[in-house]
Amino acid sequence: MRAKIGWRLDSELSVYRLPLRITNPETNEWIMKYCLFDTGFSGYLGLDKETISLIHLSETGYGKGLVAKGVIEYKNYEAIVELIDENDAIIEKVYKIDTLEKEDVISIQEFDIPILGIKIIKQFSWLILSDENILYLLK
Amino acid sequence: MQTVQIRIPEDLVKKADEVIKKGLFRSRSHLLREALGKYLQNLNHIGIMPYIVGPFTPEEITLLKSNPSNLLQVPSDKLSKVDEELKKLNLG
Image 1 (cartoon, each protein chain N blue to C red):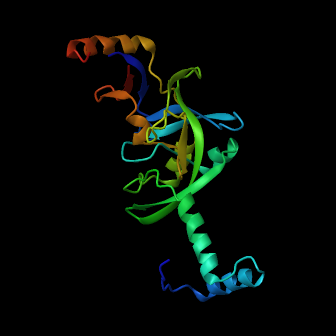
Image 2 (cartoon, rainbow over the protein chains, first blue to last red):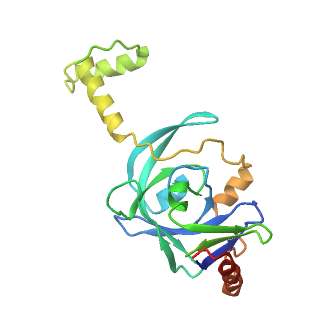
Image 3 (cartoon, helix red, strand yellow):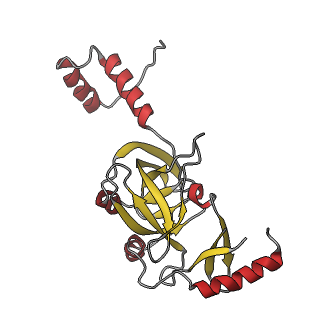
């Protein structure tokens, strides 16, 4: 296994944030967004309202979930998502994992912040070196 | 079909009756069946956060919505050092 790419801890927030290209599958409009790396979020990707409206993602439904502060309701959208580097080159494509066929359009949830969840994280291998505060994507 | 007795706020019943009066639904049951069916069809449970994220301050949320001011990607020469360490671990 080799380190394909690495990202430093965001010193302003003390979190890992990874750059993703999010593409509207209907219009091909896309945006690059740094998303919070969060293994505690059980979905694919959460995006804030502003980002969703910038690339005009179409609403596909809604969901409800029980969190510490009670029941929350969220809107669902769909998009193509890729991990990219600083030159906008694709590092890895993300796939839908809860269907039999390999699909590249994944479900997005509307949240307050851009957040990358376990359904994307577990598609790849990672290494965190604590003394360097760097998160590596392995291949 | 099963009969279910439910309690609904008065203002919702009023609104429902107005729609039924317009002839869009045959009865309250018809409206509720259709509304519930459509709601459940669009209800997708994708993923949740079992905690309150952060808690981040409003300023931090603004930062999280925008891209970082510093470059986060590490230079490629650093990757080769990690590769050497990985080789020692023999991860395959």
